[in-house]
Image 1: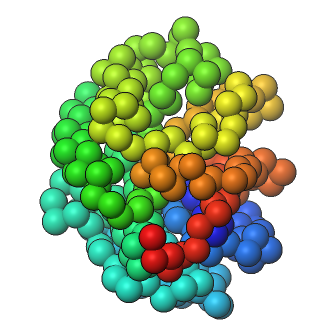
Image 2: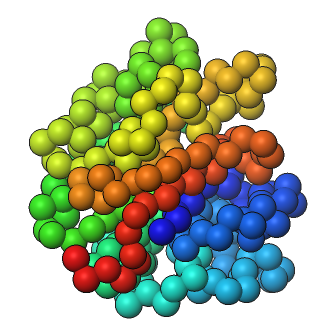
Length: 261
């Protein structure tokens, strides 16, 4: 099973940069996209409804903002748009596709970098998700929650960690929350189950020479139930082409999409 996640920073912009031509060559079972920045009705080009895929979009109410999508080669048994909580649902931040005993989610956690008010919204979302993630971790169902979590967990996950300790995305409170997520909450960082190397980043600022110097952050994840992380077999951060300020994160799992167990 191959799952790809990408924060597209505008799905139409990513299309112009060749994302869909690349995607069709990847043989992915599921592709999760965040920050589509488009309403479903605005996506009239055939690119946005790739042949061979079932296509689902969950838009933000505000035009040109947020939004998530899932493309899947396999018909889901259920699709869930949002969590039933307006703070996240009105901004199109959660889309879930269920396949037998597996749930695949495209998640776009808010950024708090623009102003303090948005940081508080981010904390609200973290507080809302934590008990639910703890429940799902122990429910016996397999989950992979793909997307932009907007938090670099550890020093290894950010190049300039010394200079960003007071920056949203690397605040002590955020990192402690991730510690709990991968600790007592019981979820797993599937990337780190496969790759423990330094300087593996998924996002680079457009300022300065961040991309050229690999001054990045690892803020895009596959957060999974522990049993699924154990089945992670390969990972790649694709950087040969740039479709966004984020890079596609590709993960392979030794798991059948409609596995009985």
